Length: 106
Image (cartoon, rainbow, N blue to C red):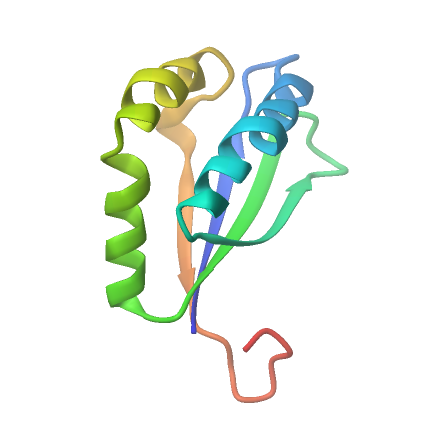
């Protein structure tokens, strides 16, 4: 298994709108394309931080699903254009994680 932890900084006052957009538009779209979304979180200490995590069987699946999502017309023309109004794209952090032998996330 391969996990991807994504940490986003929302523009001030935009986190609630971003969470709603993620939960109503982006996550359902990605799930429909085959992505497994493990979790979606807001930071209790930072009112602008949003975190989410995806799981992939392996690198080949990650590449295939990235292609299906990010090269689709729906992503390019409908979803992606709305992101900059809510997110600071320059501060996005993506961490690729491999679970240890005793991790419950296998």
